Length: 114
Image (cartoon, rainbow, N blue to C red; front, side, top):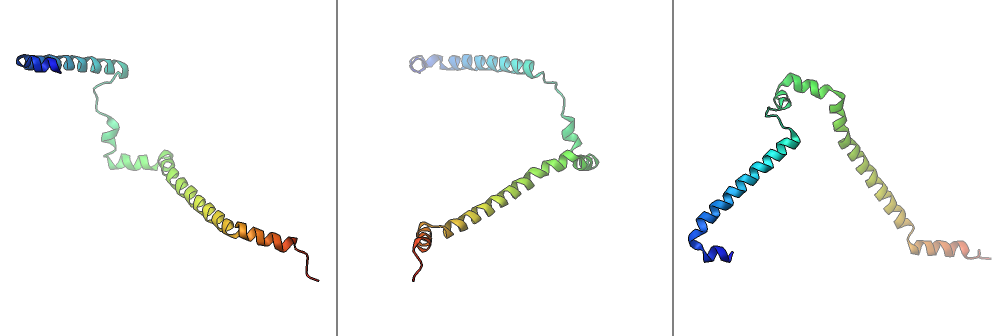
C-alpha cells in the first residue's frame, strides 16, 4: 500500500498490471473448470420442454412427481404427531406434579382410619 502512495505516478500502470493478471487468472480458472466439468455449450433441453403444456402434464403424471409431494405430507403428519405427543406429555406432567405425587403417596401410605 505504501508503494502505491510513494509511486503515485505509476499507480495507473500498476492497476493495469493487476487487472491483466486477474484476467489471466480468470481464463486459467475457466479452462480448468471446463476441463473438469466437460461442459458442452448447449441449451438445456429440459428447461424448454417444461414450458410445453403437454410435456408438463406428462411429467406431472409420472410416479416420481407424486413422490415429490409426499415429503411435505409426511412432514406435516410428523409435525401433527409431535404436537399431539407434546400436548399429551404436558397433560400427563400437569397431572403428575411433585405435589400430586406427594399427596398420592400420603393417601396410599397412611393407614385407614379406624
